[in-house]
Image 1: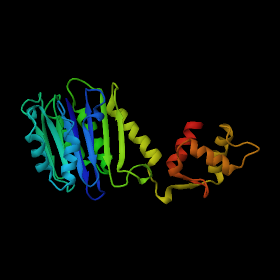
Image 2: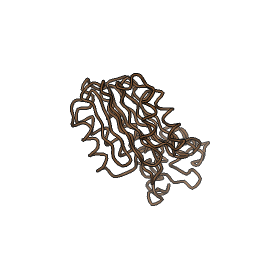
Image 3: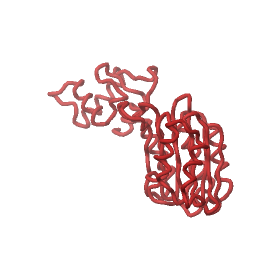
Image 4: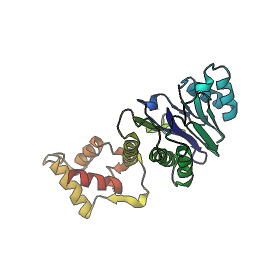
Length: 279
């Protein structure tokens, strides 16, 4: 009872899934991914074992088609399942069992599989495919664009409740320790897909990277603005230096990756955000 897109960007070495449903916490069930292995969306009376098992098979070198065949082979309820896979090489596969509730179906292309069941109609999946192929940017941007297009085309005909996006890349997680790069869920909301988009914007704000040309040095008017904020919020006092106050402020705001308290610069989007927030 879900619509999803599974896709990869081999140039950037990213694999991921975006999904939405009239079902609580769809992100806890449908999306599975592992860097350099592939990604899986398992839905419609979801057999959640398809996620870890499918990733293990693809990590061992099986293609998306071969993995799908093995997953379905020993499942007595396979005609109730819907599955989408993309492997380490960008080959895709999708399956919609004969027992899935209409409208149900899917499509594959180079590096992506899109599928859905109990949809508002046959236009949902093509709308997602068209948007995914026409959108520029990184994989999370394209996945979300496709999901939003599906939502606007009617999505799950029962209504809206949850949405999620999960994207992996080697050492893509916080601090570079794991592959979990993007992992956001809206578990229960009257309009979950737009809310998911807001969370992605927050991710870009806190963890995105601006080119050096967009770094703003703390001098002149910018220094005056930041100094005023530090004083207003109680960081800069007579007994503290600007350096220590700025350092504490950046730490409390969680912008360590978008500012340098020693060289005293911060990224332009962060400056814009804090000025608006504290004005």
